[in-house]
Length: 441
Ligand SMILES: O=C(O)[C@H]1O[C@H](OP(=O)(O)OP(=O)(O)OC[C@H]2O[C@@H](n3ccc(=O)[nH]c3=O)[C@H](O)[C@@H]2O)[C@H](O)[C@@H](O)[C@H]1O
Image (cartoon, rainbow, N blue to C red; front, side):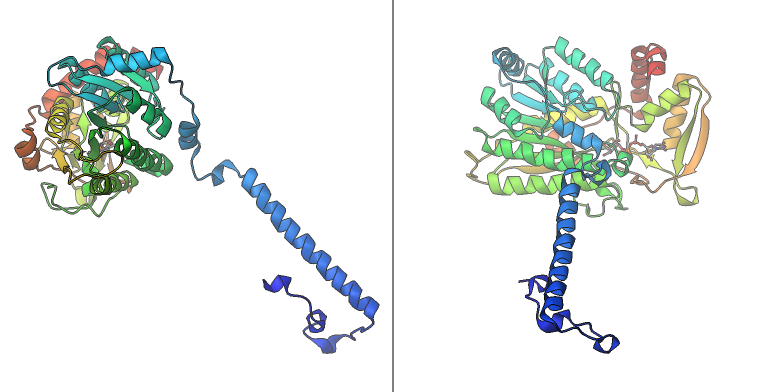
């Protein structure tokens, strides 16, 4: 019983300073006082109750823990199912080469997802894409990538990795041997604008996917995209998989690091075979417009100035930029060397493979040098605006030690930044028709 509900004693109704006025002890006045006090309490608690109900049903958008963007994504409904849809799924996932694999590629309309899907299809593997086509960046670019894949026979199912019913359905229709999980909320700096979208995709979405994979029969082997950003404030270079990763500098990095821990758990409990790939600033044709090399190109062509970050004391900011074709080779090698998961029916039957690899280029380039390469390729004098590295999650430099990937995956990057950016610029200019499409954006 709470103190408010305690039956009132005579003394409860007496003022705490009884000498100030005369207490009327008549029973009528006493009852009136009790009634008065009970009414006041009833009114008070009714008010609190109604306020709570009001807040529950009519909370303002700003009090919604999911920002509009993330809510919209999870509330969006996608059309899937039906005989014709299932046929497309089956056809796309059909293996067409001896010893081929059938792979569910999440984030297939994304930058890396498109390239990996196309490469798998080319060598005769079965490939089914999954993508929610969200509007984090220009969705028309994702649609163009989809059209490209469609022409090579890859069907992309429209849906969210948080949709368990859809994922279960896909595994019912196709016994995928592998999952290449690339769907994620990417971008380091955007995490300060929309933190929930990172939790939604990189944590909740990952767990949902692993839940379905662990119950699938047979369980697939999973290769997924982690990030160089997990090294955070680590200063030991080059970054090795053995180095500490417990100092993330951005929420993006923290969710990728959480993903690595979640992978450990699902491997440990359910025998899922899991390989995490730490990508180092991947760039190239069909790239992501939110990345610096991409929007620098756009702005340089428009004659706008660009902001180049500089660390304290004019310190150089550098990245181990890695060309997309090298990353694709690393992804395929990770799929090819992935051992089978050991569980079945949601139960572990024995120890399973758990790996993590750096996929970088091993030669960091200062961002200002990257800009100079673009300047030469675009033949436009760049208006440089050097500004202090903002405290928004960016780290000063990245540099991959790739000996582990070299040894176990035969990974060997071959494209330097100059050659890779040349291919990017050629694609950019032709895709945006010398700036025509870019101007429409
Ligand atoms: O390896 C990763 O795991 C990550 O790589 C990528 O992140 P980053 O390496 O930060 O790439 P990106 O944004 O292109 O900035 C490049 C450089 O330009 C600098 N930069 C940036 C913006 C600007 O206005 N000025 C500037 O100097 C900036 O300081 C930086 O030095 C992916 O986006 C991310 O999703 C993740 O996959």
